Structure formats: structure tokens, C-alpha cells
Figure (cartoon, one colour):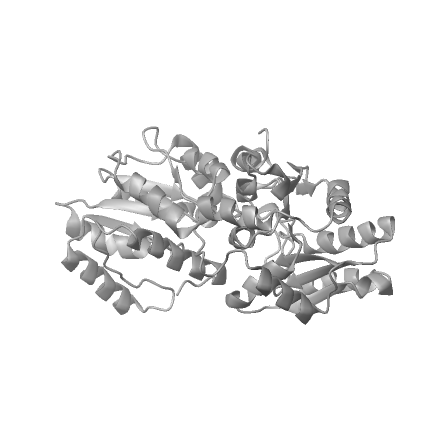
Length: 417
């Protein structure tokens, strides 16, 4: 099991995509944060004994360095192909990737990312002859697809009428997800329009991650207290429209996405390489209001642009800035338009791009091409690595401003970079 809850589903569904290819003989090996050094050694020995043609790394944590250090020297004569599914936290482990890069020299290596914008970011670190491939983290349609009967049951459970509009957020309540902005903008929308039939359902638990990349640290419970203060400052009639539902098992989110009328995700998280909750919501037929940041940009569809409304984001002097009035306007326009009629069409469109079967086609195509031999990461990677090794705050200046290095990396996550 992956150590990160959202990644547990990602790993299982990626495996399902590979398993659809009947030409592959899949052998599965455990590598997790819970293993002892001896257990990791035993897993490595089992991989070597299997004498694989291809080694696929499906998860992001623990970093694959520790186990590949044990495997690759034993397979030096064969040099199996290595495939990495790269997650958003690539930029947290430069030193690990540097050490692993030295081991990978001469191996045929593929890096697979989950979105176009993450590809643009990762390609900056790749050798000139290696470019990342895009395979969205897949969704299982047996778990998330449109179901009108489930919608009716969920709305009954929420106590909503046919007239009511239900907005929903699912995920961590954190600074980088901008939960405080979500509360304020929903309140301002209600005040501005005098709407009395809109509700906001918030699913998830708070964290204390802060925004450490740009020098914003939080103690345990600090962000929860900030959310609480924002909520209690709102007029009582607006508080009654905001529902904190806590964390629920992933299986319960199927009903949540069916019952809601619009997903809202205002994340500007540094590691926002994709958006599994958004993919599952769209595969359930739910339209979305999203920040135009990182992997969230993947959920625009030329075939149905009205399924997604984007909020502009820029990298400001000290933080990433969301165009606040656009959020308020997005709430307003959603209520004015009313219940979205083409839910089934959104579901079919999303499953065609993000479903397990779509993932199977993509990974099969990648495996059928002849990869390049890996040499070393790019000079830009070395520049960033040096900054990380010798600077405790590599992305901010002495005056707490976001520096040039951060912008060089993360402008890949902004439109019209």
C-alpha cells in the first residue's frame, strides 16, 4: 500500500492498465516505507532472481533509489529496461535522483508523468535525448462513472431539494489547496447574489504542510485554526450553507460526486502534477471549477469546454496568486446556469481519456517504442541540485521573495509561460 492515500488508488489502477496487456507477464514486488532493510534486500533479491526484461516503478514513496541500488549492480550484464511513473514530488528528491542517475547510465529508461505541464517541468531535468511521456493516472470506470440513481440517493442524504446547487471539494484542507480562499469566495458569492439555494460540501482532513517551498511553515493544527477563524467570521446564514464532512473512504466519494453539481478545487500545490480527485469526479460526470495550475490544466476538453471553468494563477512576489474575483464569478455563473445537463457526456469523455483502458493503450504504446540510453540529468538539474545541497531555502531570497530558480522551474505550471 502506498504511504499516501490518494496514491494507493493510483498505484492499483496503473497496475490494472498494465494487466490488460496479455503479452506481459507481470511479477509484483512489494517496496514500501514499512519494510525493514532486510525486507528490502529480500525484495531486491527476488527481483534479481526473476531476471526481468523491464522493471516498472509504480509508486513514488519510498524513493526507488534504495532498492535499485541493490538490484541494478546484480543485473549489470543484462541491463533491463527501467520505467518510472514519476509523481509530483520529483522536485523534493533531487539528491536521490542524482545518485540514481549515476546508476542508470547506459540503461534504457522511460519517465512517465501524469500531465502535459508536468512533462514540461520534468523535461527540463532530462538529458537531451530523453523526453518524458504522458500517461494520466487512470480511473476505474467500475468505481467512478455516471449514475443518476446514485445522485438521487446522495442528495436525499444531504437533505437537498431539486432546486439546490451543491458545490463540493474533496482533498486535504491545506494552505496549498487554498481552503481559506474557497470559504471566503463562496461567502462573497452568496453575499453578492443573495443566493439561498447553494451549498458547499467539504470532504477531507486538515494538514500542517504549509507552503515550505516558499518559506511558509506551520505548526500542527495551525491551518485548521485559520480555517475555523474564517468560518466563524462568516454570517450565520452562510455558515449554515457550508458543511464540513471530514474524511470518508474513497468508495463513498462515488455518491458525493454524483450528488454534487460542481467540483471546486483551488489548489496551487507545488506538487500538483495531476489531480486524482478531479479525474474521478469528471469520470462521474461532474463539471469543475479549477485553478489553471499544473496538472489541473489536464481537465480541459476541447470537445466540451463548458465542463471546466478555469481560474487564472500567476506566481507573485511572495506567493502564487489566484484571481479571486474569477472564483466568485465562477460560483455565480454556475448557479445562473443551473444543473449541468450533459453529465453522461462528461463521464464518457473523461473515461475515454483517463480510464484504465485508456491507460492500457498509452503504456502499451510506450513499451512498444525503443527507448534511448540514459546518460545523466541535464545541466539545469545540476544547477538546481547545487542550490538544494547548499541552501536551506533554495526557492526564496533573504527578503522572503520567490526567487528566479523557483520561477524557472514552476512557470511550467502556469498558462502562457
